[in-house]
Amino acid sequence: MTKRIILLFAILCVASPASAEDYIKPDWTTLIRALVRFNALTLSDDRLLDDYAAISECDLYRKLHSDDFKWQKVRDAIRESMKMNIATFPTAFGYETSLQLDRYDFPNKIFRFSQKTTIHNVNTITLFKFNRPVCGDVNVKYLPSFFRAVMDTPLYFDGLPLAQKDAEALLKQMEATGNKDRIIYVRFNMRIVYIEPFQHMEMGGGDVMLTQTNTKDGHIARLDVHLDSAEFFEDEAMTKLIYELQP
Image (cartoon, rainbow, N blue to C red; front, side):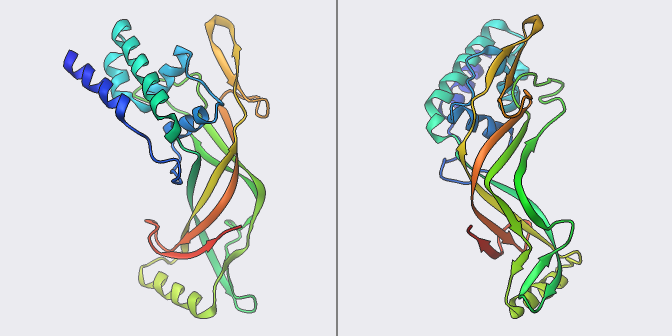
C-alpha cells in the first residue's frame, strides 16, 4: 500500500494539464483550474481542497480520505502539483453544442437556423453545471458547481452564410447520412479576460461560502470572456468544417 501511495503522489506531481494555448473542453476540473490560474480562487483551505480532490482525484479520495495522516500527504501532493503546473492551467475554452438548420434563404444566401436555435443577443453561456453527488455519494459543498461565460459582445447568428451550391451540397450530405433534422454542431472558442475573485464568507457551524459580488451565490462562477471564433461542423465529431466565424 505504501508503494502505491508513493506512486500516486508521483503521478500528481508530474501530470500536466492541457496546454493553455488550446481551447479546452470545459469540465469541472479544468474550470476550477482556470479559477486558480486567474487568482480568483485559492485552495489553501483544506475544505476547498478536499472538494477539488473529490472532483479531480476520485480514486485517491475514496481510498485515503478516511485516513487523517495519509490524506494530509495527499493534500500536500495536490497543492504541490498545482503550484508546479499553474502556468499550464486553461485560459481558453471551447464550448460545444448543436444547432438546427431551417430553410435556405435564397435571396440572402444564408442557411437560417430554426427558430428554437436562432442566436439573438446572447451574451451568456452555461459552460458547466453539476447538482448531484460526485465520487460516489460525496457532495461538493464549497466549490462552485455552476459556471457561466459572459461575453463582452452579444452574439447574433441568423444562420450560416453559404453559397447556393454549398448549401445544396450540405443538404444532400445530410440526407445521405440520415440527418433529417438538419442538425449541425458548433464550437465557441472563447478566451478568458477576467474572473472576479471569490470572497470567503464564514458561515455557522464552521462552514464557508464562496461568492463573487456579481453573483451573490456560492455555487455560481462567472467568467468574463471574449469570443475568438465560432466553428460550425457537419458532424458531431467536429471533423468536417462547414464555416468559421471570427467576430
